[in-house]
Each structure stands twice: as C-alpha cells, then as structure tokens.
Image 1: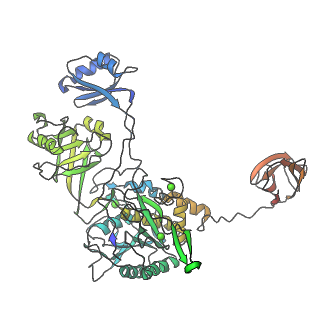
Image 2: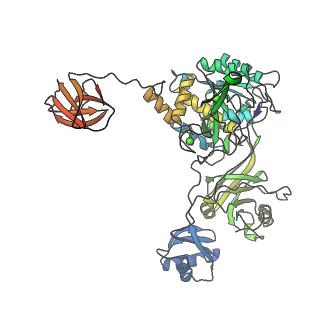
Image 3: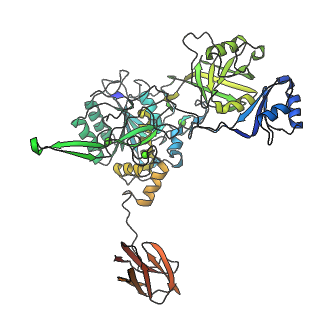
Length: 616
Ligand SMILES: [Ca+2]
Ligand SMILES: [Ca+2]
Ligand SMILES: [Ca+2]
C-alpha cells in the first residue's frame, strides 16, 4: 500500500455572499476632499445627519428616513466626491482564528472554538498520551512542552525530532501545542505525545511501517494513535495491529483522505479505526473530504447458492468531522510564511501577498491606486481591490514613496492573492478582509509584517484528524475510567449534525463537540446511552393499577395507600397525569393503546410508589 500524506494545497474558501445587499439603518458613506472634511461634516450635521464614522477621505452618517437620492439632493456640495449606501456587513465565518502575530501573541485556531475545546479544561494529571505517526516533530518549534514529548527513531527516516517536511509538526501542534501566551493552542494543550516518524520528504510509508508503529505506540503507553495518512487497499497485518490496540482499550483515529470522492482509505476504513472528515469554519464540508459509503456487500456460497448480503456499518465510513480547512498550526521554525498587521495598535487578520519585511507608518488611503500619489510618501498605502492588478497597485504605492501596502478586498472575506511571477515591487504587501475596511480606513497608523514564521496554514483531513485526536485526549482526560471505544461513542453521540439531516456519508454523525461529549459522559457514565435508572424509591407508598375496557374506552383503576400529603400526584409514563385527593383511588380513562406505567407520589415530591404497567 502506498500511504500518501493527506495535505492538500487547495485553499477552497467557498464563501459565497451570504450578506444582505439592502440599505441598512439609513446609513450613507460620503467621500470627501480630506481638506474640506470638516466643512462637509458640519453640513451633514446641519441637515440632520448623525456622524457614524470619521474616516480618511470619507465619513459615514445616518439620515433618518432618507433614501440615497434624497441624501444626494441634500448634500449637494463641490467637496463631496461621491455618496453611496453604507451596506451592512456581518461576519461570514461562523468561526475564525483570532488575529495577531503568533510570535508574540497566542492565537486560537477557529477549530478550537468550533469544537468547544476551549470550554473543557485539559486534565494533565490523567496521563493521556497521543501517539502521532507522521513525518516527525521538529524540535525547533518552541510551542511545545518538550519534556512531555518522546519519540522513536527510525533508521529509514531519521530522527523523530527533525522534520521530514512540515506536515508532522503541523499535526502535532493541533493536538498539543502549549497554552503559553504565544504561537497557537492545541486541542489538549501540552498533552504527552510520542512521535513515530514513518515519513520523510518523499512522503512514503508502508502498511508494515504502520503495523510496526502501532506496536511502538502501544509500547510507549499511548492511549490514542493519530494518523493523518492513508492509502488504498486493506492489509490484514495492519488491520490486526490497530484492532489489538483498540481491543486493549485504546483509540485509533485516521484521516478520510483528500481526493473529494467516495473511495475508502485505509487505515481509516478499518472498523477499529475512527475515520475523520474535514469541515470548514462555516460548518460546511471541505470539498476535498472523502465520503466512502457506509454499506458493504459480502458474497457467500457458489453457483445457485450464491447470496450477496448488503450491510450498513458506520465504522467503515466517516464517523465525525472537525475543522481542517485553512488550519493554523505549528511549523518547523521559519518554514512558514505569514503576515500580520495592526492598525492603531489593534490586530487585524491579513494574508501574506509578497515581499518579506516590516513596515509601519501613517496610513494613506489611495482608493484603487490607479496612479501615483505623493500623499503616500513614507506611509502605509490602504488600497481598494479592483480596476488594475494587485501588482500595479503596489507598484504605484511604492513609486509614491509608500513603505508598505495593504489591499482590501472588495467582496466578502479575506483577500488571498499574490503579485504574480513578474513582481518588480519590494515593499511588503498584505491582503485584508472587506469586513475590516471601515475600521482600517478609520485608522491613522498601521504596521505590517511579512516574514518567515514558525506558524502557518494547511488544509486537509490531515488537519481534522489531529483535531479529533486532541479532542479525544481532552475529553478522555476528564473521564479517564472510560475505554477508547467509549470515548469514540461519546464523540459520535454528541457531534453536531450538519449537511444532510441525520447521519450522512460526508459528516458521519457531524462536527465533534468537546463540551457536549464531556457533559454526556458526566451524565451517562462511560457506557453513554446505557443509562442505569436510579433505584426506585418505594417510600411508604404502595400502589396498584389494573386496566379494563368500558364503553369503548381504556380504564385504569389506580389504588394506593401510605401517601402522606393531602393530595397525590398520579404519574403516567413519567409525566404528571393529574393531582388528585389522597383518597386511595383514581380511575384513568383514555382511548389510545399501548403500554402505560403508573406510580403514585406524595404531591410535588419524588417520594413515590413502585411502578405498575398496564397494557392495552
Ligand atoms: Ca501556544
Ligand atoms: Ca473506520
Ligand atoms: Ca448530517
């Protein structure tokens, strides 16, 4: 079997506009000559406008009850360049990463919030250990509690703590990056990990490598095996290795694959291994996430006796999903490129376009930057997307003396772009989200940085898999009397249904939720849905119920003694049927058939008789 790693370069943000285009709150943007802005502000105020935003070269104001043409009519002034509706924008992403520079600030990847990992405390004393079978974890990254991490060298792939590409380091960070004020935070921060390096840059491994690795994980005392890898074709040696680990109480988690088709990958396809799909930050399935069928067919007998049986088995398809599109995590030091920016000292999300470096200064709004403008000299250019190429915009900023460029999207979401192959510019340039436009234009200073980073983005079911492994460790650390299979069942029972209603091939049970799973185990015990009812308190009340038919109706005579209150509650099938005088007898009457369980309780208390069942 070829085991190819499951990283995809597809940055497929299918963010179709989901915001309203209607004019909102009678708000308008008025573009003005900056030098005459005070005059226009005074005019707007005089005409009943209420100033909302005082930006560079524009203001935003509300005019109660006025439509666009009325406002244009009111504000007929030569210093006004343009008036347009101030559209209401809402955040498109249900979840997003926190913004900032990970070298100095700890960022929370969106999947942490989406999966409720931030709502459960990791219990470091529980001794959870996750075994990561991947391309090594590079010791150069500082965002790990290295004392808690061990590994196994492999003669074929080299030292486990030297990266064979960034994949394994990224995966490990999603599981257990430390909660320490910088970098990122993992699902189970600081969890013990054992690293088995089965890949190097070439990205190859074999079934036998994985079977061997499973034994190493077992020997290292791991509770969980996390494999962001897979390939086609089952192999009995490999399957037996993971089944043995599971049978011994462990949990094995593996990626569904990134080909966006219904092919079943292995080891995820084995019943003993939990298959993980990837969703994005809008709770949508990743377009690359594989979705094998949950049905399998087996043929028995020969000739006329040949029978084909189709069985449904949810352990051979995707069981749950977690965030795996544009996942921010750890890289070997300096191997990632990242951008960070701030405006008036506040961090904003940004994307790296081109030209490593740092720049800071006053902001200068260049519109769409179709020509040079001496006002940009020494400043950070704020530029709207549109009309000319990104490269030419940055070139015009630079030729104007600008020290850095920020290009703001003209449609919803973050602007991800480059300056092209023939880049002749040298100043750092970043993309910015449309949603931040007003705030950015209102800022008077900005700072942008593009550089080699220890943190970067990857997409793939490879990124969703360690998210689930880490969440399993997090939940399990609070319920460490459970088995891996019980943790697996709890994660499935409490996953948030998405996509087609109910269990489906893409999401399985849905997006994992750590808090819900932990609460579920607290409420139900490790066995989950098998609820052991509390012993029925007989108290002093004894009761009986007998059913009969009369005039086409079902009748039940309930009789009791020993109740202490003036009235008693008659409980039928767990719900209050009536409260009646404590006179020892009540007759219930109804037409529906079925099974009816009665008990009698002191009014408003849980002091009840035992239950008696009557069937019609
Ligand atoms: Ca950290
Ligand atoms: Ca499976
Ligand atoms: Ca579903």
